[in-house]
Image 1 (cartoon, one colour):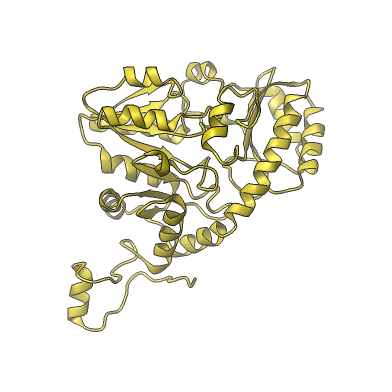
Image 2: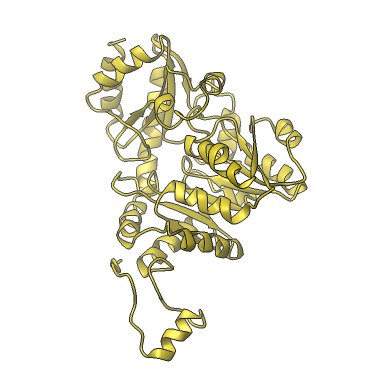
Length: 366
């Protein structure tokens, strides 16, 4: 696929320009509105997710913003999970209230609890199929059933579980959001986001993206599309490594708790087995002693990289309490297991035994 690295487009004549500008015939007007390279990426991911169409943003947070602002207005109410991506938490608690949009956080794995917080002005139920970073699994079919009774749209942040693993639209979700920075791209060299859904809803999303200006660039779209071509291969290897590492960590004396849906000890293991094709590439584990032993482990890694983000070909260790979930109230973090001793591994495609050897020598520094 070529990179159409251009701002604007030339027309056959003035009437052609008018027809394209008025959307009377297909064509391109201005790259903030659409671009051939970006369109190929949108069509490719939409095909994988089973969506009618998609729109790409400059970042995952841009996609989250586009999805929310296309569905919510002053006086509306949104429900999110008590365990949620930190950027989404910040959007719901700090940004949307400025526009008189209220929110409620609930243990989203408890269907009765979700039903109990539905209101007459609830418009959106925001779901992560596998929650960041404690890897609780959502019963999406059950949540969709509740939402339909209340005429509420279910929007799924599918970043952790790209279509190789899970397809929310197949289970009745209204729309899907991705941080394409993560698994969709997979190479750690470009930031992006995407919203996918019906053609009617996507017109609203496109309107937000074009007016706020947070659209993806052609070069970033090309980089993301290039990474997308290896999605299945990357996830197959990473999931295999993640299972191996989770079992190793579960048997380690210094590890207090391991979070991974593939383990039988995971409280929603049977649900994950039922609705997902594999258990994912993220493993979280907790050790006693708080921040100091975590620092020693992170400083001792030789192969694993200690940084933020996830979904790359390289294995990355993150500390959610001081990165993705830093803005959450400490009491809330502690209550839901996002402790100072929690480490989140995004497992890459390296040799699994090499990764375990690196973990072993790092854990010896406790």
